[in-house]
Image (tube, rainbow, N blue to C red; front, side):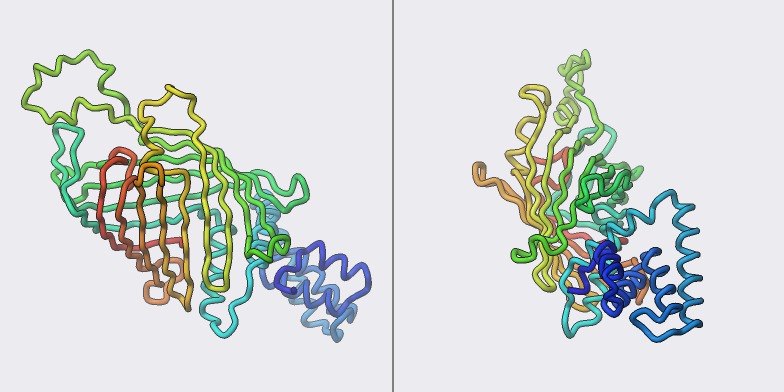
Length: 369
């Protein structure tokens, strides 16, 4: 299948003097951004290998190859990672009869695996919950409507150590809840999620079951707050204060996870399974998993430039869970800026209130999906 041809496979075709197939493979890879493939295309045009001799086209592709080698040399080996990440896109099944969906999938794959956007990046200036959020700070009076944002990025460090086209890197996600419409506009909660990951594209190895990638992570998540109970405070002296002020506000956990990425035509599925790695008694919110469960399923359906998504997680031992529905669409044909609407219902919206059931609708913009 041509869309899944790797650079090494294209080179093998060339070495076997199978120039017609090699030229087609190198052309596909070059159009996806491969610098080495662009050089091969130029040489094959020049020497009439698998294609009619064309000096003009040879000159064009030599210039493209030179520009890419120069740019990627100045990006400190970023080109090697782009080669690996392009293979993830090439492993996906083409969408027949819907060129807009194919274009959207290509951009989505490049965002997820090519341009270091890790999870979704968004800013939702308006969100409305079904009840007022509790305050843990005496000076703050929260409301049921607020702004919400998330930025998430990754940095690739090493690639292809074991010949599996794998990528090793680090990522950081920050998810914030901003009481924009309250007095002094405080941040109600900010969750930090640094990770170390290994991403392995499956290409055609597991095509029978639609498995396209496997990601392993070592992760930490925290809200960066402390335990006020450790302070020497006599609560009886503050009888007029909300009892929440005296509660532990620290939320954190460490975990390992495995993310299985599937594709079924226009439907994408990410199954994430995690296991907590904290030692028993070493944390101060041991019931977190009761509400977050042991994993979640994310489904994304792409049609044209519309993206519809849902997230589901559920712990059968406690009957606690959550689900989310979302939709995105380009803003006036802009590249990488989308209208974004989402609805959340359940537990674990934020770490500070992981055990509080929340219904919330939000709208705004996303910058990756």
